[in-house]
Amino acid sequence: MEALLAFTAALISLRLAGLLARRRRAGGPPQLAAWAASLAAYAAASGALAWGAAAGWGDEAFRVYYLFGGLLTAPLLGVGSLLLAGRRWAAPLGLLYTGLAVGVALAVPLTSPVGGESIPEAQEHLDFVPARLVAVLGNTIGTLAVVTIALLTIRRRPLGNALILAGVAVAAAGSGLAGTGVAETAGFVAVAALLLYAGFVAPTARARRTERSLSLTSRMQSSGRSPTSAENAAKASRSSDSE
Image (cartoon, rainbow, N blue to C red; front, side, top):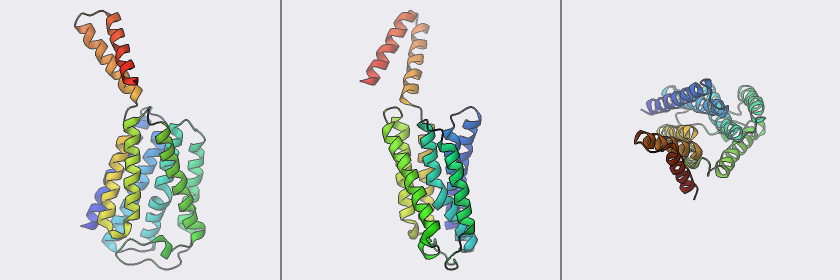
């Protein structure tokens, strides 16, 4: 049952990552690519959870889980937030960090073999330098970027940023409660992925005002009112939204 729940969380995260990638290919902004990569990493980490729950934890499953869940998910979220804020240098920096993370996960020796049925704790199998230090720095900086930019731009994207902050909070809670079991962790992963996806694709406040204005203009024109009246009504709607 635990393996099934973890696998379901992986499928949900992977599906949402695919939807974001499709939006990016259709001409969406560059942050969608980073966010899609983050959710794909989340899916891979959930797949490792399912692997460990179904076949027992081993060195290979632990390395996959640590790479995608411990080293990549939060930093790639941060890259997406920096791109949202117009920091184009975040993309090559994210690629450089991803290469470093892959190298660390593959090359760093384990201090003790991984086994058992419960989710392994990193401090029991990895030295602090470099593996755990890279994870601490990457997750801290990535989370700070997400939270800071979400708060700074919350007036422009109130709903989207609130959902992203909620998703980050749920993901953090899931990481903190990883010792409670695979099923509980998988549940947090699925909820966090859904919240993050909803936040990523939520329209900005300006886009919602524009949509309402265009709808109002269309209704007024269809009822025979002049375009000038429709434009004035749209302006009044935008003015009331900003108050």
